[in-house]
Image (spheres, rainbow, N blue to C red):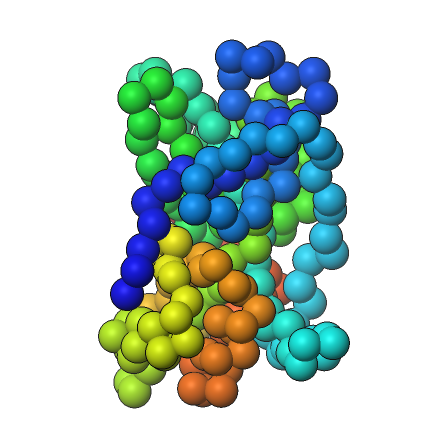
Length: 208
């Protein structure tokens, strides 16, 4: 398996301080971080885990990942998590990538539209991209997942587990260099893929 640990690419929104990470960008798979002036596009959230027909065959279900750019200071991660404490959405997965002068916090929520608005209102710079949510089970292991993608010469850019899982089974978020092809391959191998609408909410009173 080939992997890449490069930071998430993004494009800065207008009005961002040049010395700061982009305020709101659309993240695209790329081997290196690259910033291009422009605005992000907004996509409708997934309403089902079934694939949707496209000109290429089938588009796999996906979820939106937000990459939040933070200065490398004590308490900044808490600020992000605390912002979601009373929000109408919950953090289903989180991963932190630390660099020398900043950190990138990747999060997946069960309501991307609410999360996007919250991040904007809180003033957190962020980028976003689609990721695959894949269930692991008997006969559909992490190893067999890697072999399936390796056979198609697809690179896994990063992966991390979900805390809130649709069926209570091991589930990971996965980014690859060709999301559509990877999703089609995994579906043919009978892996179960989830969309945003499949991500559950915590019961009232439970913590993330």
